[in-house]
Image (tube, rainbow over all chains, first blue to last red; front, side, top):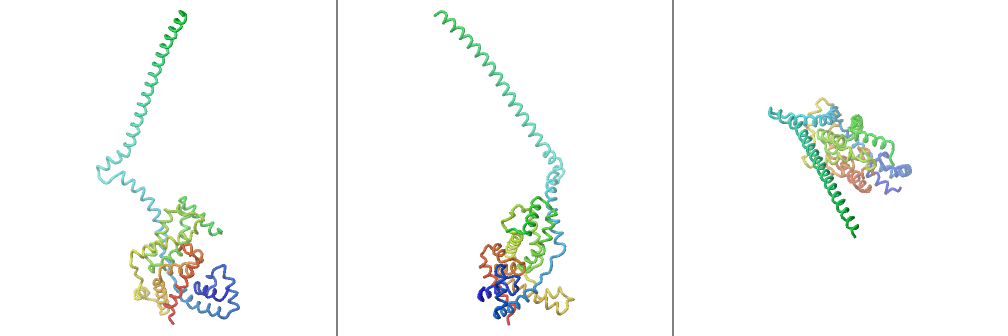
Length: 156
Length: 181
């Protein structure tokens, strides 16, 4: 810490040591004890500090906290309100078809999907049955051919 | 190195990320006044400062997951949000600082001493308003908000030397305006 660096610190942070950089505070305080110039610089800085310290800002209005808390709760309520409003609608016609659609659409989709699955199952069963029949016929044919071969081999 | 205050802030934000309203109330209680002071000093307008602080807390509630512990101090993050909103607000509107006449209209029953205090406070506000935005922010953070030079450097995304340079120039200008003799 030298006078040059002390001048820079005072120039940037003011005369109050509490605002000086922590890593240099102790060294600056030591210099302050031994240097009249440093002491004078600090006093000059205090003049501006005193003025700046009078810039007290009024506190926010007491209702600000309540407004903030109300806002986060109203937004959550707003999402439900929007959904309810959309489902119910605003006109008499909308009162009828919107809830019906909201309930009916998933129902129709569910039924359609079930029917599709059932159909697929039936087709699979048919395919398996046909495969079994074909396999049986093939086995019979194979047996017949084997018999013929045996007869031929006996003849030979 | 994280200290006790950081650990407490981390836990509070973790709770807020889980949707804990009590933790959010604690956050508002802890940071409302400092953030309001900061916004008010930046803009020189009470109503806009309150709106900005309100928007900041709402943003924090709905975007709490954006905050990552260890990346930045909670205080730095909050002040950054406020600063960005103030910059946006300042660019959108021509800020009208309260004139001396309006201040005196409001303070009808004030004594002469109080009026003098109000005038001085108004002069300081005006002098701060006339600083370039980065000098003003540096002065507000380090002088009024209790930020260390390192924290201010993080918020402004500059070096500590650059912060000191901003502070030095800011104080020189303020001295010229407020202590002309």
